[in-house]
Length: 252
Length: 345
Image: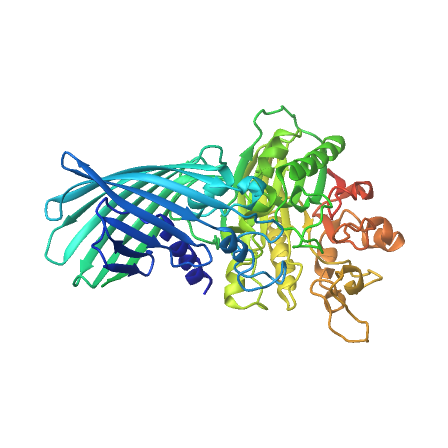
């Protein structure tokens, strides 16, 4: 049970920064995944994305921009409010310290202040599914209100640590890319890479690489399975983790 | 250094190599005819600060400054006592609760000790409770001379826990190493036995500790051994510490009920140290303990400075002289050091 919960937490938090191309989904189309956010196509090449983990509300808007040569360009802005979720992680079962306070990832001794983060990134995509689609992206984010958050209150785990670092350090830089290729009618793969730069943090960087095999039954359902390799610095030092990655996505 | 695919919890083999340490600068020490040995449970370097895990505190994470201050107090006492062999328990080497300070390396670099052998009793990438996070804590042997063939011997796990709790819980061990003093080899053995088991796990731990000592003796070798046995002497006058150990939100024996606080009631196990006393020589003899019991108490819980029980011991298969219970060090940990002089055979 503990392990299942652990994986679920990773999934919920990782959904905030779900990687994607510069292509927005069609107007009125909606997509949702087990470990990916709810997305909806709006008018004028705009896409709305909302994290399903309601205790850590996160909303982002992606907008298409004029192409540059053969590169599709998009910009994405994201707003996140982590306070309720981080407070919940201090006592998910409602227990008190020493009960034991099961599944608590942050000690309840710490105060979690009111915080918000804003993140903006540029995305460029080029190619065709059967010949390969290359995407590159880079962005910068700022955390506001975290100056009263103790640096001892970090969650020193892969995936979570770099994504919450913006609240402890006040700033986050991220660059990455992905390569997608369809090699059969229903089969494709995605190779994804991201680097988090966390200036001022006890852990200063994280590299994340993901490879997924994708089975698309139709426009309504697809299944993704693969691995995620994370190598980064944490407050205790550097470590690499290899984790299974999977998602089940629905569209309509 | 990057390491991949480590298990969430290190479950350890029955016997495996200890983790070896060395001071950043080595001091030269020649052979001696007598050596000073100290055993000390250092409570992960946080002195008497209130902590939820072993007392009644309301904190799980301590600051780097607090831990460094605690370590400085320990180092000052160690330098003053100038031991040749130091048997330490509750040493954090990579724990979130103590700001990830490698206390084994810190103590080597801030005392006159040269070499260390470490055996973890709790190593997990995350403890999913109380916000404890990453934990690596255990037993440490420090020596002025090189340590060789250092082994961590696994002791039985508690049987009074469900499987999931047991998976994430402490794995007690006996740490054994050869001290390569020039011209004379002998063994140093260190352990920290279960405190809170409500079944016979502590008896199994005592048997496991004695088995390691018996093995050394059977080879015709000599040892100095010690640690926090979490057991009181067989002639102790007080057996029930439920009242002393209860926190503000707890209440024991108020209406004559028989329920006891875990780790605070010793009556059923009062004879469990007999085998060690009958086979090997303690630094503080039973008769000496009986004569001045309060002078040899080594522990009081939480931030209570009045020591009230003896849990820490030194043993050998030869003889000790000048056994001392260092009650002047009460503020440096919730246990105090016990020292003695061992004549090299």
